[in-house]
Length: 281
Image 1 (cartoon, rainbow, N blue to C red):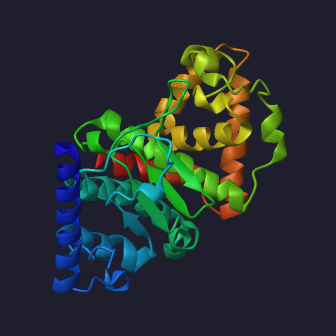
Image 2 (cartoon, rainbow, N blue to C red):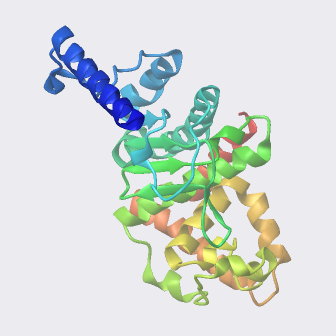
């Protein structure tokens, strides 16, 4: 009997609350704004507007947007104090050398129109990490931004390698490189990460990832030669087995000729400009 009385009291209380709410205000769901107010513009936004949006029509998204990245990955937002140093580095060592060598419209015409910055790495199931992705030549997503520091040359070279790699994809997706490149070292494999760097270079690949597919091989050559410079590339070739050195030279010459024929760019001059930009960063 007592249990039934408690239930009755609870029912009456619930009814009373419901009635009270309806009397105080008439809730109209259609009038509720579920979209948060636009965030106020910051000093970072102003800098990006002046250095990327106005001159190149490039948007840089650094505020975390879950729908800009793979939904099946655990990722973290970028720290705001990393945004300007990263994008300043990219402008100085990627945009400026290309503009100086290829003219002011080159980057405007071919650059991706959006950069998405992510603080953490993107981990694959096989234990490797994704440093960057390029989607249809329109968006480049850069990961591991939170550990970037201009004073750490290794990190600078890592992010530059990612940029030059992804931009290399945009270039060959616009104008394809010669088919003969694919047959120079045909031992490509999806399990490239199972082999060491020394093993990759003994087969004529500049990096382990270059063994993935010919497209990655081609852009890894571009990125390595630009970021490490002539001296770095020569060191790799000279330390390779004698029978492999001609393979590296063939790839080098195709890259150089491709830049000349497809884009009217002197690759070695671009290489020197890039090295100067890195050295003066």
